[in-house]
Image (tube, rainbow, N blue to C red; front, side):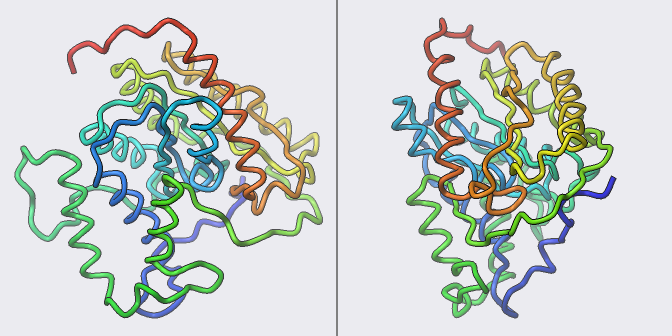
Length: 307
């Protein structure tokens, strides 16, 4: 099937010549804020931009009493790229008590990541004993020097704020961002026949295996769709995808799939197919908080074995 959201390479989305794209700002600042602190968090929110725009750490904290941090970035690196982010987070802050892995349809269906989040782009190799968090920070610093000139960091990019404003907002919100665009929901978008891609299957298995070794319960959440797209054909597609994700989760004792997997929200709660509005993010954050409260009341898990 055709992907419901067009795949756009981040390098093509420069709103002003010389200024960093929004995607680059998001990746840089999410990692910078995450790796600049060693404070542990109870809940790590991980995933693509549907996580970034759809889950509010402060709402979850108020509803559960658990500390939370959002490390949502983009779909382009794939689940494997998100696992690398988890590795860097854990090396710096330790394993969280819970992970919420939030996905868009695009992430489920994309066959291969568009770029890698790793230290291999660095102009010189780092010593093999360099911790993962240090590798990422050195690599990002080198990339940033090549991307930017100081005069561009305060420039707004179309409807999106400047690089420095993005960084300040992410720090204030503990990693959450708001989508300024609004899509009109007139007319129906057909998802067509769809299956979880081989790349996503492999990535989820590897991520959930790693979380299992850390004795970290994980909840897999799919971004809701607007009521305008809740046609019988589209809902059947979501049921097929849910069954495939359930098969993956069944191989990992600490993994669960949020039910209902194919949720529908009122049209006004979705800014785009993959991004919730602020009101939609508040609603979804409270739903996730209810799951976390139930998990927190269970007996503690056994500590992880040797890695």
